[in-house]
Length: 205
Image (spheres, rainbow, N blue to C red):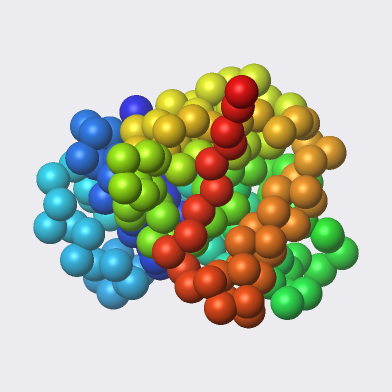
């Protein structure tokens, strides 16, 4: 796939690295192509940098991993997203998010043309994106959204990043639940002393 990554911080950088290693073409969409966070990613084969609109135009899938307060601004900067899949990896943190919204994904849907918008890669820390393996087991990822096409792409990319499975938790109505799940991980990891090296796996019997 050709994947545009908007937001080259910890999450974007970890996923760019994993996906490039699987043969995907990664286009980092940035405001200033000469100076941006994660410039060292260009040393990796398969990763390029361009403007935000150009990265979106050249890609099938767009990952948004910017700070949540910028969700509306970023959505507007994407240009024509007709036919594109958008994966939202953002969370509203400490009440800081797009004004008037309880989750970032609804804000994106309201400010872009594609309906193929899903939420994924938001429920765990960037360290687990870089390495989702614990002992002999890989942890799981989760996805929500109405878009069947978007969920299929997110599932493929979750497995390409090394997650064992990517479970479907429902449609657009579950965007807020996904952010609450992220807060569950954050609470355990950062506020309850468990540390960042924890992850979730669905067990069955």
